[in-house]
Length: 476
Image (cartoon, rainbow, N blue to C red; front, side):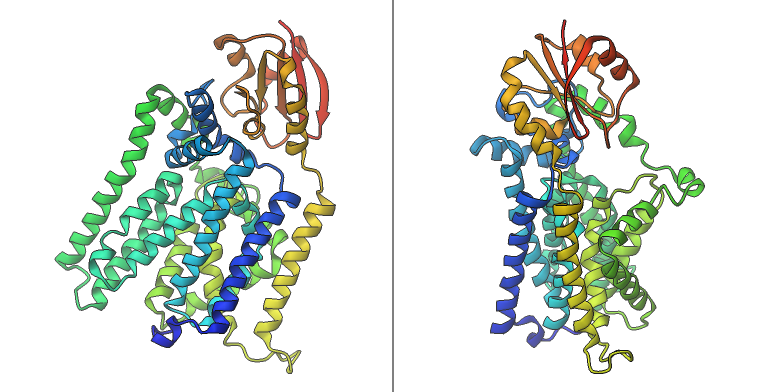
């Protein structure tokens, strides 16, 4: 797995396959948007500030201020919404652009170290993965983070020492989109040190100490800037929302130890196995082979360290959702493909190429299973149906209160319900409310406060149910 010029240069056949991968990525995401996926809760939660800022000149109406956690996301989408209009489709188009750029960038990055057979195989495994496609179709943070992460990787593997020293710049942008990716500092810094060592410097040299210091200071200062701007725009909500219980209490190793089957990594691994069983087994096998290898190249050390660091990082958190581990599909696909392509034949099918059989099985299973699951097993898209109803009826109400994922396509002011912190009663008592109030409650996968239930029983009348969205009318 060297670095020969032949491996870096694409021939015409590989170029055709490369652009075919990009086209499939585009088509599969567009298909997912229009036919497979409902609106994801996080889409609304992390877009609502940009919508409010763009339309009404204030980022938070009732105190929800996720800009404190993901400032660059709000700044980017505020600009996009100003230029075009607010809406989930517009936000997802931005995501589509970033994931296309990410796939191209990641392909070219790995192509520096692996031959075309390995990289093409790995990216086939990647782009057909149902979980990867779903969570990079949503207008969430992942596709933007991945783009800046790979820019940082390209910098830190550069043969130019000055370029390696600016690896902190794109990584700071990634952290300003989602700060939990901070654990990637470890493989990045390790690579900077090992690159210097490969050029003849000692591990404990002054050069390494200087590079690590520059990376740390540069990363800290550049990451601080967007968070400071978010603080400056709304200092009260910055601390109240950014330091709320749901954010600061994520680390809970005791609960993971006491209930490992339902807390921590295990539920998410089960979910990945349900959605991509062949790929997950292949990933475990490929990672075990890479871990056991005694002749790891620098990029293999980097990839193994990436996986190990991330698993250790999330192993002490009581709630690890599927998007948190999405980036691991990149290193695990490459590591698995690099060993899979070495297998010539299977004893059971001696005349069949083992690697081709497994790749075809993964591609076929992923496309068919994702389509079957979302088109036939779980065909309902209640968010879209509820939004359609709301757009027809909101003009009849003085105040609109809805879960955040419904609010992005509603062009009026909306207050956020089904929040882990804010209650309906707080909104009614602290905001300038006009009656009647239209209030939508999300009865599944959301926080339902007891006092909200009591208030709705006493003062509200339920007028419609659309799956897990219950629509109430509140009179004065």
